[in-house]
Image 1: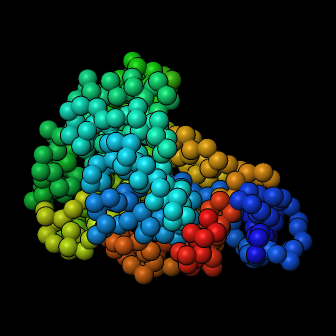
Image 2: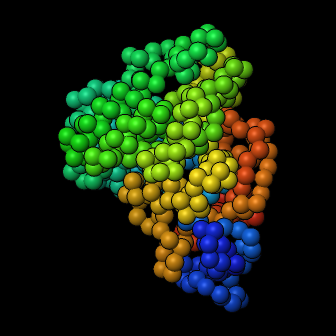
Length: 437
C-alpha cells in the first residue's frame, strides 16, 4: 500500500469528506474513489481532527526508563491521538545541554509513533542557580524553543528575568512551573479545611498565584513570551486574564485532571490522586473550565507523569507526585467540555492541536485538514463510552486516576506524517511504524 484513503469522516464535526493521503501529505479531500494501492479506513460516524499535540509530557528517558521510555511514551501518545509531544527536561541526566536534547529528539525520530520535541532546562541540573546552555540547545538539531524546569519553579526573580531576555532573542518561550517553594515545603495536597481534616500539609493556592503574578510582570518588562504550566486555581486564572487584557505575551495550559477531579479524592489516601499542583476545589474546577472556554487558558496539556508501581503503591506522604494522561486526555475533554456544551470540536482542535503547536513553534502540526497539509490526523468515535481501566494504557506505567470512571469518546485511528500508528483502536506494530516512517 502506498497511500491511505479515509472515507466519510466528519471534519471537526462539520462537513463529511474523504481524505486521501500520499507521501506524508493530504493529497486531496472531497468525495473520492478508492485506488488499488490504497489502504481504506472506513470513517463513517467518526470525527477527523488535526493530530493532537501535547506541550507537556514526561517521557523519562534518559535515566527513568523504569517509568517510561521515548518508545513506550510515544506509543501511549499515539493511542491517545497524539502526533507530537514536547518532552520535559527532568530526565537523568537533565536535558540542559545540546547533547541530551539531541538524543531525545533522535529517539523519537527512530521510533516514529510521534514527533518528539525536547524541552530544554532553564537552569543547570534544574537547580535554579545558573542558566543552562539555552543558546546551544536552540541551535541544536533538536531546535529547542521551549524551556522549563518543570517539577521545580524558577523561583529566583533575577534568573527568571535573564532567561526571559535570552529566549526573546530567538522567539523561544519559558514554561514556568509556578510554585513558590517556601510556601509549599512538605505540602501534600490543596490547603483548606479538608487538608486539616485529613492531617496532610496544605499547598496554598497563593504559592501558585504569586509566581504567576510576578512572572507576567517580568514578561511585560522583557517583552518575552511566558507560558504558565498546569494552571490549577481560580486566582491564577484572574491574573492571566488581567495580563492578557494588557497585551502581555502570556499563554497558559490546564491539564485534563484539573478539569475533572477535585481535592475530595484525597479522602481515601489513594496516591493515584497525588499530583503537582494538587487537585483543587470545585470552584477552581469551574473557573478552569470557564477560562478554557473563553480563551483565557490557551491549551490543554497532559502533564503525563508515569511512575513505577512502587512509587504509588505506598503511603500518601511517601508517594511520588503525578498521573499518566496521554491515552485519556481526549475522552476527559469530551466528557468535561464537549458534552457540557462549553467547547465545540473545532475549539477542541484548537486547544489540543493548533494552539500547542503554535506556542511550541512546531511547524506543520495543527494545520487544517486540507489539500497539501502534512498528514497528521486523529479519528475519534464520539459515540463511544467506556469505563476506564489500566487495560486502556499503552505506556509503561499504570498510575491513572481514572480507573472505574466512565469517559466518553475513543481514538479509532492516528496517522502521523502519513503513517498509521493506530488502526481500529489498536497500535500498529512498532517495526512497521519505524519502517514506514
